[in-house]
Image 1: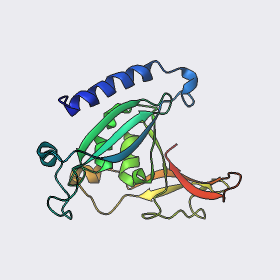
Image 2: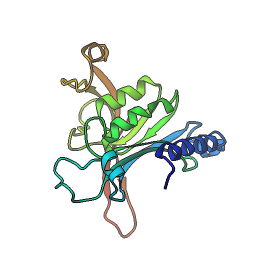
Image 3: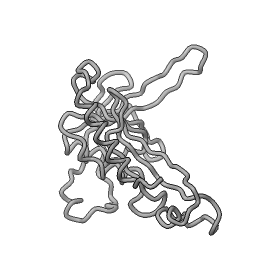
Image 4: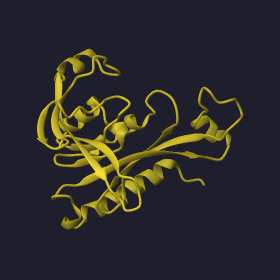
Length: 210
């Protein structure tokens, strides 16, 4: 109970990276390290220290509900260990999953691959990881973008290259940085179908910089 959070995150990083360094070459994907990213939330005991460190959200009634923290982690596809993690308040500026991911982005180097959910499917995220020489594989965020396989450069059935235009709004980016970014990035969209005996066939669009 008396151990600080920093202790757990430090130990997790040390052990995880040691094991990843020893990963068998056959466990990698085409010789490349694949790292998965995801986030979750956790409830904690209703102590004064926890309430102060993880205050309630604006829409919670005072004194009702337990302190809530956000936890985000990067873990290895080859051996399943956590390589880095961040713990933050659930709500507030700079506390979202994507913000925590970018704070851990130094883990990635040339040739690495990030596997993430649809939250990562955004122009800035794909661009920033390509700048590091890392590729991204994610699911299309249908709430923000639609796939049109009649456009772009056709690679095959339900498989094409398409240009994504730079967003017109520059959230949390200074003008100089925004202007230095390209007007478009090239991404690949692939529609895949998942067939399982006894289940209805599902369809999804994968977005990747590969």
